[in-house]
Amino acid sequence: MTAAPAPPATTWRAVLARGVVLRHDRVRGADLLLLPERVVLLDGSAGEVLRLCDGVRDVAAVVAELTVRHPAAPVAAEAAAFLERLREEGWLR
Image (cartoon, rainbow, N blue to C red; front, side):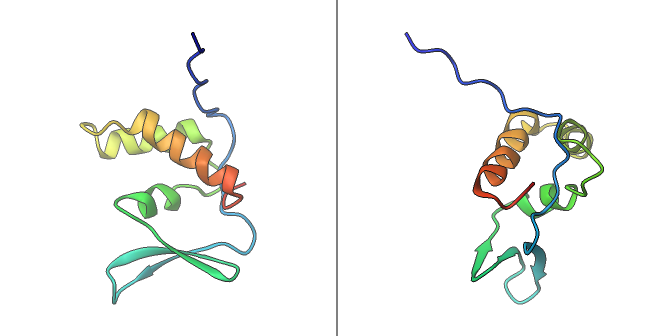
């Protein structure tokens, strides 16, 4: 039997890494993450989540804000896991 994965840490203050820029592309009607020599087209509400990553709020505060904005959505686990994944990619610090 394997242990369940640990829940993502929520005490770090998420902010875009140096050289990473969040932009909204009006032509595509989508949010883009501009990385050095790479562009990532963000799906769904990913841009909204990243706009809350201001380096002031910790991940728990970002999740709390999203829960207020979208009370019926399962943001608690999904948003924290999403931010942790971007942190592992080096797109957030």
